[in-house]
Length: 435
Ligand SMILES: *Cc1c(COP(=O)(O)O)cnc(C)c1O
Image 1: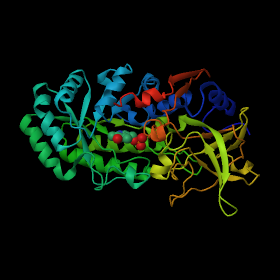
Image 2 (image 1 turned 90 degrees about the vertical axis):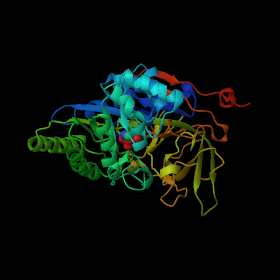
Image 3 (image 1 turned 30 degrees about the vertical axis):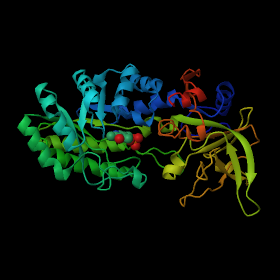
Image 4 (image 1 turned 180 degrees about the vertical axis):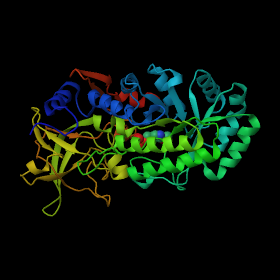
């Protein structure tokens, strides 16, 4: 057994080398896979033009942003700081759209205006945001985008559904008339209609949103020439999951946009805004086994590793499952979640971190309890590698909990060269702002 999984050429020996060279815990990203995912998205069928924006909250490291931008993908920022961060990574404001819950005031507001004047697209997400930006946009002839809350969404869990009435993203359909009345009064136009229904839901829900959204656009937005179907494209992290079929979703969108054009005479440009799909499977977290325990004869085996909820909080937050790879300290693959048949030893274990928190685990079942998963039994000092860790791991985790330091990030370049793209945090940095 040598290959980790069917989608990447990263080897167990490369993972062990990285662990040796940079220390653990450590994030490692496969640049070749990121590039391939970008190319796949950019070739999504579309009739009148396609823009792919990367939802940069999935992973905001400047080197990742630059690698993605280099492929021809633009950015979606979820906060003012994300937009600044993208810009500091060398991405011009013209290539960035801001889709945020923030309502910038004072200096932030002045900065927002500068960014918009420099070409950043502003995706209005509430009536209040619209009221506050209206005069400025009118005075400077800035066309706006509107995020519409369609009242229907889908996600991998309730906490990742952003389109139903239990979440508050965008201008709700019930407020559209009021928003459009204000826009008309100020002589404002919306060039883009945006809907993001949630993360990782059933591709069928993504598909049916296309119909709903084109209906909304036709009814309310006579001047829009662009439709953004948002992100949320399902990625398969575990072997049991199925990724969204990009060609299939594109063919459907293309057909619907062509029908729309025949009926209305309007040819709409299409946008999509994936985060997960671009980076999730490109990321690996390399941890080292520091201890082994067992909770009695009727209990579980535990592997204690040096990176847990503070490097990947998704299992605790969502009940997410990630593939696990056991790699010997010498770099041979002991087991992969993608090759369960080869696990004849019958050993299984819960993989937990070092935090004083019983939910600090990479193996949590649907009831929120630690569970044992089949894995090649490692020795202390061997590596447990968490796959599917490129999205919402480094960017989302509570990394200073238990005063652990933020883990470093390494980019495995297409050439095979490993480049450190974020240093390990120091304890001095953890406490530097305390008085
Ligand atoms: C988070 C987010 C996305 C990306 O979602 P994924 O599930 O990572 O593809 C896209 N658009 C908006 C507005 C978001 O907030």
